Length: 104
Image (tube, rainbow, N blue to C red; front, side):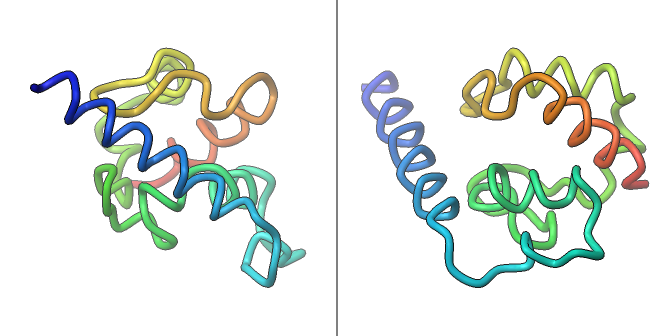
């Protein structure tokens, strides 16, 4: 039963992620936002909230006070809890980790 619930949650997160990446007007197109912020908005905000306030995923407003950039990068790479691994990869993952590590 737990496996079915987890599968449902991950599937829902995936569908929500696809919806969030579906174009349209959003702050990801804001030229003043950093690369990490744009990537977060496109790939992560559907679960962690547009303002990092949490939702399906945890609140990340002060994540930099709990984790280092390397620890955040490791979570992005390997996943944690219901978060699947490699939602963001390569240089993009480094940019997001750097941006989130500054959130104190």
